[in-house]
Image 1 (cartoon, rainbow, N blue to C red):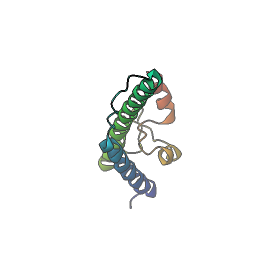
Image 2 (tube, helix red, strand yellow; image 1 turned 90 degrees about the vertical axis):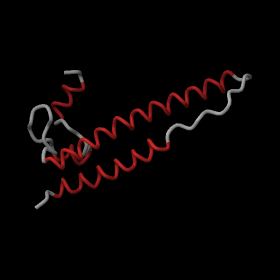
Image 3 (tube, helix red, strand yellow; image 1 turned 30 degrees about the vertical axis):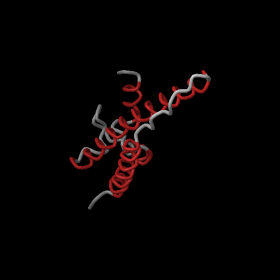
Length: 113
């Protein structure tokens, strides 16, 4: 029998993967022609383009994590911390089904350890 947590996680991961693929496919809207009369308008345009690039990069990184979680579901390692090998709390997986570390190891990894 399939654990309901794993079934729910797969559904959430597939939904998230699909959302991210659409967001990435939409890409970045090309900026309008630059007008030379307003430095504020030019600065706003540059800011928006930089923001869009950062969001696209974040979405791409998040998509990698989601696809890795789907692979862990397929290979039977989903729910096991990639660092210490202990189970990841169900509550953590419900909140972040792409989590690859238990909360203790995530704190260590987050600090660069």
